[in-house]
Image (tube, rainbow, N blue to C red; front, side, top):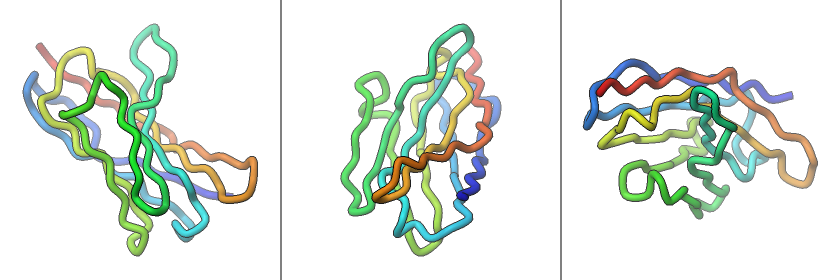
Amino acid sequence: QVQLVESGGGLVQTGGSLRLSCAASRSFDTLDPMGWYRQGPGKQRELVASISLTGNTIVADFVKGRFTISRDNAKKAMYLQMNSLKPEDTAVYYCKAEVVGSPEEYWGQGTQVTVSA
């Protein structure tokens, strides 16, 4: 079992920034890849960005250049730096982790990000 806990969400104005964090209950060495997903009102959950154990990243086109994903394996934490936020970024943001060599995947409980116009 892996517990993932997100933090850092909140209310911000258009153009503002937030930094999301995802803390894991077990060693990051076994979690690969990890990613951030979001689900806006009335929308399906979508991938925002993912990062491998070695630091390779995939970033969705709709946030490219504005959001940066990173992970600190020693601190068992993953981050999403969100800059130049737009109202359409309003969503619940979820942390996801996949276990190496296993079909297991785990999700956090989500953190709300609201961007006001």
